[in-house]
Structure formats: structure tokens, C-alpha cells
Length: 86
Image (cartoon, rainbow, N blue to C red; front, side, top):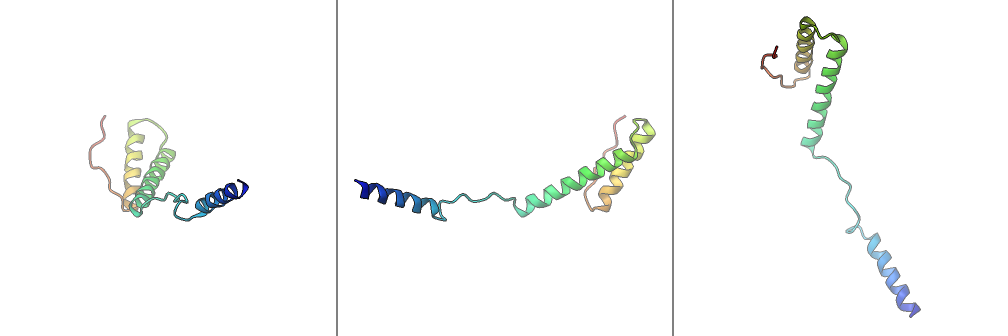
């Protein structure tokens, strides 16, 4: 009885150590990495624009939007051309 339980234990340990059954670490695709980088730049542009123009006056909002759009263009990211709602 001892011999068979030891054999089962060794077989189980061997299966756990098998590379086929090891979990595969998750990683993003190349397109996913590009998208994450673009979102990070968009977020940084928005934060910087808010930091430079913190007021909520119409003039400050217009300057903030212009600054954000200019930042996005400098980083070769698309900029929406819709007018700002007032």
C-alpha cells in the first residue's frame, strides 16, 4: 500500500511540474500595448491642460481645449473636430 501511494504522489508531482500544465502568463497584444500607450498620452495631455488652465470660465475652457488638442497633434494622435458645446 505504501509503495502505490508513493508512486501516485510522484506521478502527481511530475504532472504539476510539467510545462504543458503550467499556467501561461497573460500579456497584451502589440495592438493592445499601442492602445494603452495612446490612452496614457491622451490622459497626460488632458491633465496638463487642466493644470495650466484650471478655471471654468469660457475663456479658460477654450484655452484648455486648444492646449489639449495641440498636445494631441504634437503626439500624432487623432483630434475630434466637433465643436465644443456651450
